[in-house]
Length: 117
Length: 112
Image (cartoon, rainbow over all chains, first blue to last red; front, side, top):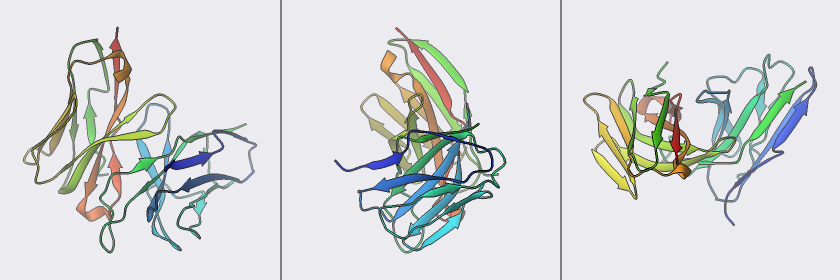
């Protein structure tokens, strides 16, 4: 089956700890994205990557870091510097059009719910 | 912020009725997309409408785009209890490097 997977589904972290959320896709998409969703809210972009070994900050990148060493993988690390990390995290991917922007539909994973204890 | 606005924030209807959700945006767009999210799940893409299109259909879904008013609407006809979900519009602005800007969403409840 083609798709995008995230693990784990639920994650608990103690304050002061870093934690890494996994995102893998086998859709052969160039572009990948990380979003944060708080209760009753829309999605806010954390980081995105249009191509392997390149990524850009989104609107709320502070306290987060990413890497894009492989086309199919885009892990997100929530660092201890993130003041309020409890949220629902969603990863997405899309086909990349042209040389820069990707205006195409995005395919989402099932999400990871992170709770800081 | 270029985040669009959706209204209503919440909508409750009976099965069989139509549901209409609206989305407004700020500046020129490449396209506007609608997504659905069931509680606690990821988003699912419904429809993409380009800036040079005025209307698109997919099954019981009808999306319109009015670029002069910078607004779009999603109509779900003959709604079913299974349509209960949150619906988000997402705009692909030309000056945002291909990023999608999501609205706050409309929470739809369809009662049997």
